[in-house]
Structure formats: C-alpha cells, structure tokens
Amino acid sequence: MRIAATGMLVSACISGAALAQDAPAADPFEDYRAGRYEQAIAGAETALESDSENAIWWALLAEARAQSGMSKAAAEAFASAARFETDPARRSYFLRAQALNLAYSGDLAAARLVIDGAMVDPALQTRQSLDWAMIAIAAGDDVAAQDILDNEALHDGFTRQTALDAGYSAKRRGLDRRAVRFFDIGLALDKSEEEPFSPEQREAIRRENRELTRDWSFLAQASYSTAGRPLGPALLDDEEALQIGAEVSRRIGGWRNGRPVSVFARAYLSDFQGITPAASNAAQGWIGLRYKPLASINFNLEASRLVGLDEEGLDDWSVRGAISGGAGLKPEMAARDWTYAHYYADVSYLFEHETTYALAEGRFGQSFLMDETSTTLTLYAVVRADFDSGRIEEEALGAGVGLSLRHWFDETDTVAHRGFVDLDIQARERIAGSERASGVLVTVTVGR
Image (cartoon, rainbow, N blue to C red; front, side, top):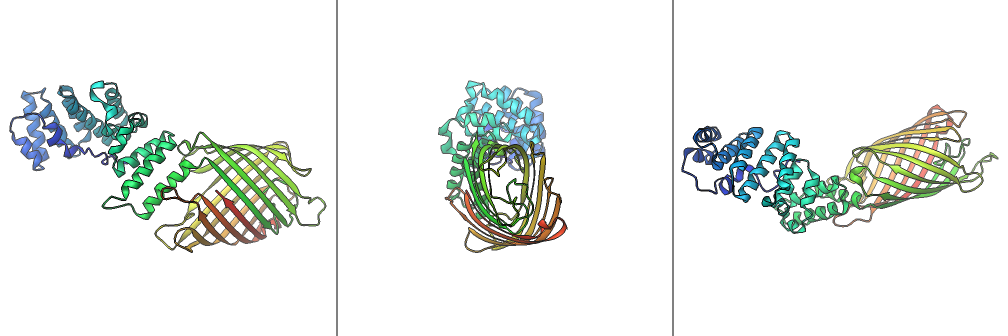
C-alpha cells in the first residue's frame, strides 16, 4: 500500500505550503514549476549557502528532491524546513512530508520517530488531521493512526481510498468493528467514483467484512461411505457407514488480524451398516479450543476432550493440526467457469488410546457458475491418502473422481456470502494399501 492516496502528494503542495510565505523571485522556483528539478535543486542549494535558515529554500529543495525520486534526501530537507518554520500549519506539513519520504525510502523506523514527535506536540494538532493518520499508516504505525482516527469528525473527510486504508489499518490492530465501518464507508463512496471498483474488487472487500463479522460458525454434515473409516474416531474395521453430526464454534477476541482463537463443541453419530459384531453405533462428542497461528495460511491447531456419548464413544484427549487451501474455491465474479484446485491435510493424536490418524487429499478440476453469483458445480479428480495406527493395515491410497454442487447464501451489499449448502460425491479406487481406499462417499454439508 503506497500512500499516494493520502490526498497530500508531496509534489502538489509546493505552491500551497512551501511557498505560502513571501519569498524573493528566483529562477529555482520557475525551474521547479517547469519540471526542471535538477536546476531547482542546484538553485535552492546555492541560495541556502547564504541563507541557511530559510524554511522556504529548504522546502523548495525538499520538493525538488522528492520529485526526482531522492526520498531520503528529500526527507532530510523537509526536516530542516520544519526546524526553521514557525507557522504550525506549515511545520505540520513539512513533518508529514518528511515522514512520508522516509517511508518511501524504506526507513519506517525513522518515519515512526517523526510521527511520535509530532503526536506529543500540541501545536501540530495531529489528532485533528486525517493527513497525519494516513502518514502513520504509510509508516506502518497503526497504533498512532487509530489513535488519530478515534476522532470521528475526521471520518467525514474520507475518500474511498483513505477509508479503505483506514479499514485495513484497523483490521491489523484487531479493531474489527471499526474496520468494518471503514470498509462500509469505502464501498459507499465507491458508488460516486468516476472509476468504481470492479466486481472482483468489491467482492474482496465484502469478503474482508465477512471474516471480520463472523463471531460464530455452525457446520452440520451427513455422509454415507461404502468403505473406509468415517469422520469420527471409532477404531473399527472397514464398514459401510452413515454418519451425521454438527459443530458450533465461537471466536474469542474477534478475527485477531487472521489469527483467531475459537472454542467449539462437536458431536457425531456413526451408524455402521455391516454385520461385524464390533460395528455398533457410536456417538462421539468433542469440546475444545482451536487456534489459527498464521494470518496468511489456513492452518489450525486444535486441542480437545473427546467425550463418549454412548458406550461405544471414546473418552480421551486429542491434539490435531489441519491445513487447507487452493484456488477457485469460491465463485469468480468475472467468469462463468474457472480452474479449481484444493488441498487438505490433517494429523490427530489420541493420547490415552495412543492412536495417530492422518489424512491428505488433493483435488483438481473445473468449476462452473450455474446462476448469477451463488451456485457452482465442480467436477474434479481426487487423490486421497490416510494413515491410521489403530488398524491392521495402517496405510491407504486411492484416487478417483468427484462432483460438488454448492449454493452460497446469506449476503448483504457489504458482506459476502456467509453460508453454504454443499452436496459432494466421490468415487475412488485403491492404488495401494488397505481396501478402504476404494468406495463411494456422499456428503451433504450446511455451514454458516
């Protein structure tokens, strides 16, 4: 994010701020206005040799250096201009320009020091300045930026871009409700822009709002499998099985800039259809804590207590790690069909039963939009491997084909779809290991 969007471009402010004082007519000013920045720099440096405390000459030198791409040198000249300037408004501008050029040069630490100094200077009135908030964001100082944006009167001065910049800053600070408010303002202002956002750009912001407002989630699932271990922890031989279950989770402390913590409760009932005497029905519950430690990767750590809900259920402690990702997983706004790729893997361990279970699945195929925005049909090839230390044959590897029909629902003008209904059908054949790698799996999932 390069904050040219602050509305306070250095190059545009020479006539309004740096030259606001009476200054002698001189060729360097004409050189600057004509875009001859090297001559303007040379002229300003010559003038400063005889008038080294003139804020105007320092400002001209700084502006010309900035226009020439000399950000570090421009920052130094702006610092001198601020040091010799007595008018608070112009000094505030020079300090903002200094911090901005330091940020452009990559010296964010130095830029934040300038901001820290300005924040404690009452004459500069930084908390009454949206420009200062945007400079703080450019310098990576979201604490100072959100301190300034506590002044709600400043929100009336938002442009589309400054509102969105403020929203991402608030998101990084964990101020979820404020971030959503700023994103909403940005989306509203977009409607009056000469070049409004594309549907893809609006959708990206709406998805930000979805994550920031998702305080709780619910997942219900029913599945039928002709072979292979079902979703629960029952350590049985391969059996035809019907399974139903649900999970409810609640976030603690909000989105936490992509690192949420959630508590959850889960229950599944497995109805084994085979004739094996050991294959009794099993009702299993979990209560646990889930943490996503990495903002940019969908990797979750989970610790839970397994609670047997009938005689066949297990009482145990479990830890689990799961990762997933891919491309084309949600409707593409500008296409009727697109490439679909998805991967999922998890590993769990039951302490008292000393059992390890691992699963990895990869899909690749093509998705098709069946209506305007919310229903997709996906055809894919699938490879699936699992490991279960509770079985005689621990490993299994299979591959096959699948079909998924998904409908998304529950959206608003500023929040993307929050719920979905999905029908997924897989048919796989064994490649190696146990025969449980073969079979048909039909799953219906409802999530929100």
